[in-house]
Length: 344
Image 1 (cartoon, helix red, strand yellow):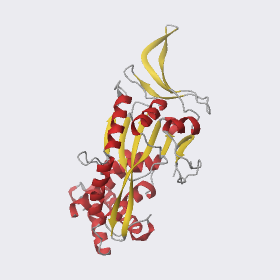
Image 2 (cartoon, one colour):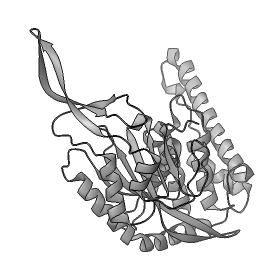
Image 3 (cartoon, rainbow, N blue to C red):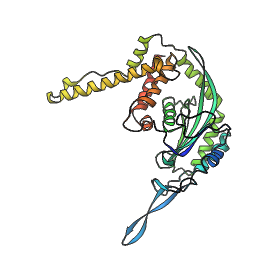
């Protein structure tokens, strides 16, 4: 599982990271202190005019290249993407400063990913206790700001129960937010902005301050939300398999409605799909039954077993983080959450 950390620019307070790229800090640090002391100041993001050769002259097209500028630890510059004059790239320094000014809390984790195209900062929001069938479980909630320096990602603010330390874990946290967004309750995805907004860094700061101010209420609501799942035990294996079968059912063959020449191919595709559904059900059940990470025997545990499978275990032909964010994995996780909610 790749970490996709740029130039060892990853920070964690106290807790060791699975990839062990750097050692955790024993002291609390601000975002600007992390950027300066751990990441050697980071790097600037600059726009440079694109030119073409016309009639033996270099003529500007009016478009720009988004360039990762030189860093102290890496003098090589690369192009992140292309944009028009309307695009206003965020700067790592400005993001870190806005975090410090508006959140006024120490950084929990912070990193640059994907050659520096993306940056995230997390902090610990007030925790909540979930009463599971096996006892009290302290559920930490993290506030996470995630910014991209190309034209695709913009800036986003969300909360999640997962602590990001790499590409896959930030995708896991984002997936959780996608599946648990409730604007009235203040959970999941909270705010998103695009690089064409000239007030992007200002608005991001306002929202970070707002989220921190509402954190206690959000924690109380999450306690209730997960309390419902955690107080609903899964009585036996029959019920566990019933939940999985409802979330990821097989499909009936419709080959008989196809032309005779195409029936065999359709039948084969249906069989392959049903086999993949069965493999998913079996794998998630294996995690729920004891192979997963701190899985409790309740609806909350089934949700976590499902997230663990799709975000860490299921094979992928492309980076898992991409599939979790934009592909079928996110839909599969949401499907389980919907089924559990319907049963409650």
